[in-house]
Amino acid sequence: MDSLGALKMTSKIIRVSNELLQDSAIDMEAYLARRIAERIGRGEARYLIQGTGTGTPKQPKGLKASVTGTTQTAAAGAVKWQEILALKHSIDPAYRRGPKFRLAFNDNTLKLISEMEDGQGRPLWLPDIVGVAPASVLNVPYVIDQEIDDIGAGKKFMFCGDFDRFIIRRVRYMILKRLVERYAEFDQTGFLAFHRFDCILEDTSAIKALVGKGSASS
Image (cartoon, rainbow, N blue to C red; front, side, top):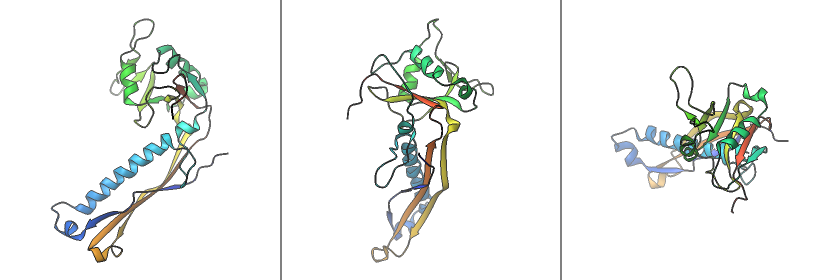
């Protein structure tokens, strides 16, 4: 059984000359901290979706590997509105009532869906109404995540469910270390960040995926 822990990511060491730190017109240390945080954030985002739960060092088991319930499209590189509807209704109504029930896909998929209509000529995608309702697809709110696969054979390109059941644990988010002595002979300072986090899908019935017909190429 999977368990929720705290796996460690690192930014790897970034070496900066002390002249640059001392003479720069901007706060170079603060700038580096922001850039490192962005790097860590991108790495976390990828693992939350694409993490395998294996490897050395061990990766978190992301959404793609955790979701086992699937609905398959009739074609490898295309999706019909009926297939999105089938995915929605493959989720138990108890989960569909949750405040975090939504769809998740990348921006390429959103572009495709935005051009689609249902059997009565109504658009699948509806824009948000400020203060009233979020943007939706088939009346389901959605999130965009660029780490989710494009539509393709064997690809889990759309997820639907109660995302409150996908638990993310972050331990203090990011710790940045300043390595003053390590590169002193080069008159450089090193910067290194660590981030501990993990994720788990606590209920595999809560989130399911739409998969392109066929097998994914290696």
